[in-house]
Length: 285
Image (cartoon, rainbow, N blue to C red; front, side, top):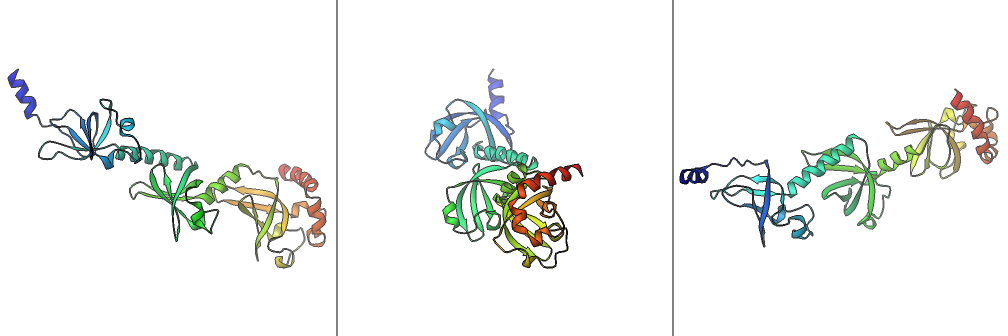
């Protein structure tokens, strides 16, 4: 038995950095905790590696003598003591969940924690993320967003570089797409007039009314037909969620070629009835 005990004392435990081990919290100290993982010495868990959440009660996250997993972040020192982390395990689990959400094209909720000139920083389940200003629904007075919860989609989630770039705009667009269908009549405001068409804002997103879809008659100059801020009703004729494109038409609402150019107010006033008729033709095409 003495020989066996001596062999145990001399046994070299193969605790390696990056290894996940089971252990029980032995006792708390002011700067961390000591954990029994079956080694020659108690392992050390620094207070900074207890949890992603800094304000938690130790007795809740690290109950004494309760078996749980730990990650070895520093191998044995001269005294045979290794350094552990629960926080790093939580980070891995959070990243696993975020990657799965990204792969499935899902949205998630985050909370705004700070502002810089490029956008806002957000708390993403304990990790730090960033939303560029151009991908926020609100572009001005970003300080007012601090503390607010936003629904976002992923632009970039790079685990190796610890980089999380998110978009509120894309989440809004995705949510809007889920509520839209071909043949639907929507009301919006003219946001921009280009040589090739008119962009119409509605429900925090926008679609394109191409110049060829304005009327059955030739349209020479869209700026002579529409004004910025003008409220119009348009029919959705195509949805491309992958590219984020919504194609619209007022042409399909006309009773005869050129009616949109001659009597737009009349076409708009009776748009719902005209849309029902046009919808049947569109779906049968």
